[in-house]
Length: 213
Length: 184
Image (cartoon, rainbow over all chains, first blue to last red; front, side, top):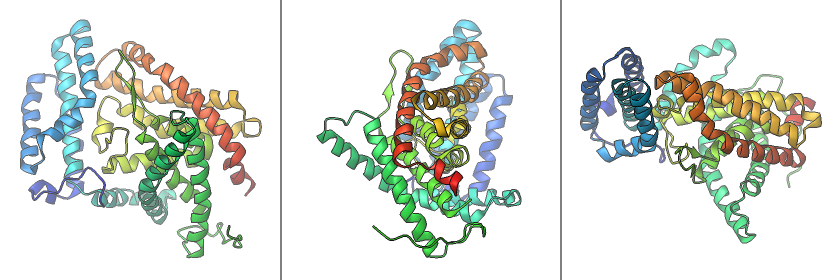
């Protein structure tokens, strides 16, 4: 899988099973909400930093994840400094920083395909409630397959609308994008059914083929 | 759920992703980015209806959680759910479902006004009902303060609800999906 936030390295963190990493993340997520003193969170942040070093992930990646939050973090700090206490402000900011960095570490050391497999396995108990794993897999792989295609399509439509001087109007891009994609959904459905995809129930009997355009 | 439904869900998840390529407009002062992506959430509900719309957005979020950098600005992974705007993301599928539910109820008489109302109720009211309490809890600020802060998003979201209504009504005319389902 070529796109994703995964960064290839040889490290113990990369070799760890995704489910273990997710469990650790969950534990950390609960842990940081139990701590009330920001001084206790500093060593935790240091530990996350150490794990980044172990995983050999460049530190500028950490900054790239935190930068979009910077304004909001500053706002939280100021609101707390003004309304409650600076201590609470630092607690909140440190907590978010730890969570976001730890979560990103899990993401960047796990391949997208491995993570999807793990998520699919985690959904297995839902079979009892009528969730069909074959359909979930189909939906996941179809979406992954068509995302790059639709990126290109948005670019195409924007260029076409630029020729009409309308590339800034979201409506004149969204409407053709939607109609063309929904039309493609029709062809795709027929192709799937023609190839005998039947993760479906019997209610979805094959329909007589329509003449192609 | 038919093969056609699965395909619609998957392709709409891809549409939500593709709408993330529009560069976000940062609101001055508040610093919150307004992206075309939450427009995709509104459209999922308005075009596919409650069930499929909600599932399409859920599928999109599953891919984001798994580490696909599909959120506007190329963000992804579990971190986005744990950050300050995590509650809004959790609210996305519910919002799409709510919009779809409202649109289905008024499908025969769907016009701009009704579509706009559905998107305001589902896309703003429901979404904020998830997003604002999460900020209040995670940042430990009073709910009222968090709510006041979130008001900065409202003008941008009203514009998006308007755009979603125009697109939904136009697409309904060109390619009605919800009707196709009820008649099948």
